[in-house]
Image (cartoon, rainbow, N blue to C red):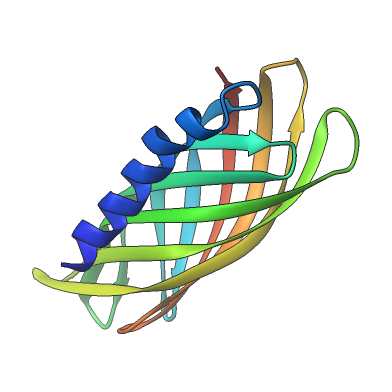
Length: 164
């Protein structure tokens, strides 16, 4: 049920907002690497986002990550299966090419612990910065805390950003 809620929020953000904000809407995507710290393990993931920037200060994002680097604790392999999330994003332009931002949303995460699936859903929030080296291409770094019902995770990410 919670995954259905995340999917509905993401679909509404990505497909409903352009109809409300025709002239100012900017669609963007990111692809990058995320380091997921779920104490006592650190996992690696490929992470992608699709966002709709409504105006200079506000955006919505859908996020998906899939594990590519596992870890081991007490002889048990731990790996990220997937993470899905939807966020509202507030941006603070520093210059024409640099933005600081904060985001708040909801995430669902599936982790495989020694062959057993563990899931967690909950609030996610974070901060970051993005810098553009052309009108449409840039780099983004951010930190996100996922407060799931099964525990907490700190995610540090770096990504390529493309405005469409």
